[in-house]
Length: 486
Image (tube, helix red, strand yellow):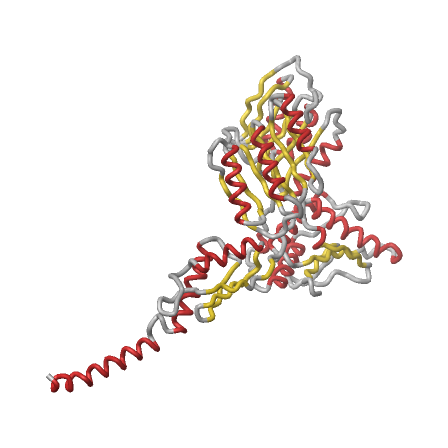
């Protein structure tokens, strides 16, 4: 027996050495291997749970959480997610034992917009930005409760930049107003709560409008709660639907023809003739329809003026179409109230399709602006400082580029005077042109704190671009991208 022990001892010794070597250099429990595996698992879990702003570096079993957190609440939730990303911690078992939160504050989103929509069937859709995941969950639960248990559709995103005060309280107040309407939407844009919708009961309509208007500072409530329409045009899944009452066959034909001439989709005519009805609104419909027909979504209509809104246009469209319809309605000099509540949306910009905005953000953004301006010159009316309508689509592309640029970048709008201008007023003319572009972008909702206007005389021509032949003949506007350290 002892002889057998002596014979097996070398084998056991070799096995022990091999086991030790494997445990030290190959085992997943080896510190280097363990840290790499934990880091991989933690980052995968963060991505899977929607924390795309966060990432983890492991120091042994200690995780360091980094990234630009949209809120303190979001940072703590991400840290909890990292702790649960692997098996329980411990020297033998392995796993994340501690999470060190070393995040930076996220850049604020501007404008900070949250939206809730109530459909005709009572279903609610929630979208836009919220300060934290916890608040998003509470808002979703409130919307579901107000819908009688019908689950709300949650499209909300966590972001930094919510205004001070009781933001959540105002959002929930808006949900309460929305639940009392037949259908509609509320938008909390910064510190302004816009409430739009329909409510057939005049007394309830007046009550809801008064509640919204009485919203306490620092927030402001703006109601646009309408009764039943006489006539409407609405973008639907079917196409552009015209329905309601018109006075004559001529009016009906003109409205249908205008709609067909200005939309690429189908026009559905459900209008009825009512020869005895007033038609003081028809000029507004004929004036607003060419631009509204090209909106992405929305509706416009005439509502009786007995305390209601009168003629209303709502929806989403490129800023140029919104500007067009506002100018056209104002020029019509309506004898009844007319309101345009429309929200700008980005257009496609094929000129920048090959630019990677995530790589070298400032350089990419500058290249994008240069490419758009090279292909889409910005012009002015005869007075020299009023933007021409023909230039508005170019400005829509500049707006779309600005939204794709990193949120920390600033934009200096440079306006150049004509070479024919006199030297005394040339600088002022150039700055007025730059300010006109800034005004257009601010009216479309862009953060004015990220914009500045500078004027140049004819002796300071716009810098040459690197596209094509490098010529800038007639270039009156240029955009310079700056970082906050510039």
